[in-house]
Length: 565
Ligand code: ADP
Ligand code: ZN
Image (cartoon, rainbow, N blue to C red; front, side, top):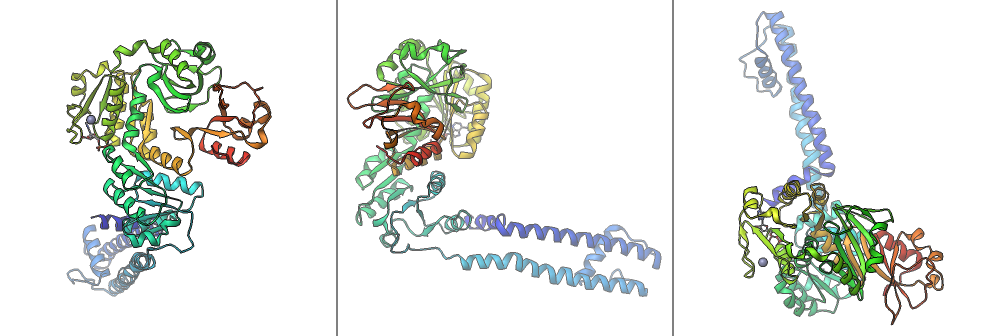
């Protein structure tokens, strides 16, 4: 089945697609010719021989004569009629019996055979290959990862045993692929596993374990493995992986954090030592409908607002940025400052309630996160989760409004939508937003393409599996200390570049030249200086916490030299 669809896909792309257009035009021309002949046939029969035929009979006559079948049931008996019939037969032979099959062969069959013969998958890399990244397995996470590696000009090679996938990647995406079984020692030697920079194991948990063991029997090249089941983390690590990424658990946690409306401490997304990065939904706090200047968050708590989310759009805030009930502020500060924020806003803790639609691995991880807070939640799934002994879900289809109503969803403050089907997720987001404008809706996107649709349907926050996975792997590769906020926003740490030592922030011109903003300055042995003023002097021992897009981060590295910590 897969082979048929792969072959069909061939006709729908590239040159074959162009050729398909030519064929359609040609068929249109043949149809027109038949219609013209049918009309002429009727005209000549009526005026030369006084016989009247229907239009269908005309088409029938033209086709039988053009294909040289000529049953002889309808024939002319005049010279002009014979000449006309001869012209129709000859043109039929030329257009239908010679040009059409020839065209089909030269436009489709020959290029297809040529492509098959020409494509020889590689089974090894040149001996001098070094410093390359080996990506095992092709899935949505790997596809995003390949794009990122490509855009950063990091050499990489994909290893897959799927012939069609390797053909597609090489022909269409210009990706270097080696075809073969990922756990074959010979293949690993041939792809120069010992001189690779990093190995990304993106296969099933069992295959990843096998791959790690095989690689470890050959060399010490670092391996980052994505695991599906958190219970396998230890095993994969034991097999030799240096970094293990329990993607589903991480995504579940991301969704969990963003679904609760309880206090600020619950919203810590990540931290850089003392610096905590937290998100706070504005709804239900004293800051609704105030500008950032009026809210006086800094004066009251010491926290610095470093960004504002408004239904999927992240902005670096200005004084006059308005905080609406749908906004979410991203703040940086110490634990004590967060505690102050919690004291200020955390009153609604008791009535917090989250609904989780979908109890797969991600839904289960989100429930585990809420268990630890603890925040009460209700799980709904159409099937029992065989791998979970801990949670009990309401069984039923989440798209059934009656079921949701009976389960009391109107009381929910937060909603996590995490089924494995994006159309279901979009439908659920839209209908939930429609019935409850203030609910915090966080949704999971199984493919990148649906992120925008989920935001358009009314989600407050969307987490895309592939994007999160690829970002984590890129950070591991570049041993970057950075926090992933969303696609396009990261927080990162750098030492003060040599050329900026002893300059003030104003003189350093970091924002005008790179677009990145300094959110804090760290000095050894001192407390963190948040939101430093423009006259703060940068010294050699300082490190800077910055926020910006990956491009702005890149610009920073290029402009001031890469000095990661
Ligand atoms: P993951 O492990 O990545 O979370 P799964 O495929 O295991 O992905 O989980 C998705 C869950 O969503 C499954 O348990 C499935 O039963 C559930 N699900 C899918 N569609 C619906 C629906 N319409 N109503 C309720 N649950 C659903
Ligand atoms: Zn569970």
